[in-house]
Length: 352
Length: 93
Image 1 (cartoon, rainbow over the protein chains, first blue to last red):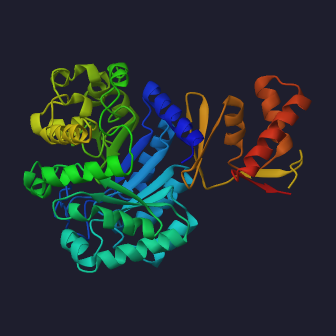
Image 2 (image 1 turned 90 degrees about the vertical axis):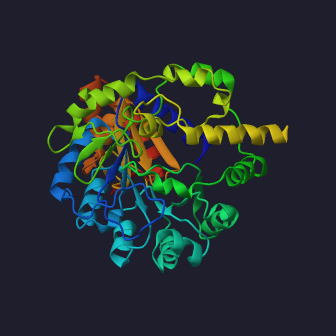
Image 3 (image 1 turned 60 degrees about the vertical axis):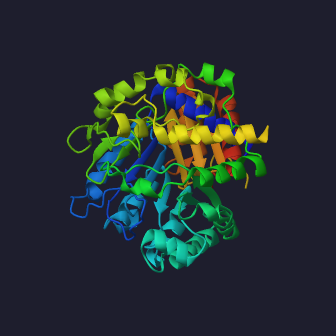
């Protein structure tokens, strides 16, 4: 992305915040999945009634009127929805900037044909290992790694940009360099995520797979010192102060998520429902639901615990959704984010 | 290709767009290209969603902005040339 595009993108986000436009919408087409990742945060609900093409069509029409630009299809595994092709093509023809999140396992010739004809902004693949042994162990499906790499190669050959996204777990964190190199070697951009999202059913079992302090330290050091990533050790204090009147994040302010049944949420991580898009006009929900109005009122200055916390200047990824899981309060501290801030501080102290 | 007042033009169907605070944002995959249009550009863009002759776009601008025809024509042609170079529109002779 060029500097000019980055600047335009920042302006766009700023305008969306100002006008409270749902610029970024995530559509979960289905919760069904053909993999069984050990750390998955999505409930494996196989029996819920999923919205069909006609129901999604009505919602997409309304989102277009509301100003939505970026539309991400995800799941579960989005490709398993029986109307995926119709829904995807319709979204493309409505001129949304479409993104597809997938594990690559269900990508067949039909899917490649659709992507080739109706190009997405990008495809984002989940990758958890640099070998079949490691990746398949985490996804629970033999052959998932081979399928994934084949899918990445095909998408690259169609000149569609793609990301390989990896959640760092205690299983794979030792191999962060190899996984990144693998994604880059097949033409993709790599994105590692250090935060393991708690399961939506509040079962904390998936958090057993989070990285240890030492593993996290190694990753943070690598992506800061070796790659000279600026701003990861601390947020500029002046910038922090000027952001005090800013919203906590974009959830419910510039973003929303719709699940397979049409339930509307502020973002992917936040499992608090604003209403249902089939029962009520989604614009009405966006403009008037108590949840969205509440989130828009919350500002960084409301995070009282942060004011006395020794690690606040190292805390880069405050997430109201994660806080809510733990305390039913959007502005309280979430221990995992604090752990990351503490480790970031330790890394900083060791390098100075 | 030179764009003239009698040329048929149409938006590239691959381009995603949205209108936010009076500006039209255009994004063409891959993500590395993003463009913004002002109110007048946005009006032209909306009307480029179906095939249209350039002279009709000029008339639209004149009607909506009370502009003189030769000035509007020059501005519309300049914008269309720029959009064409960026592969945001297709041109049919």
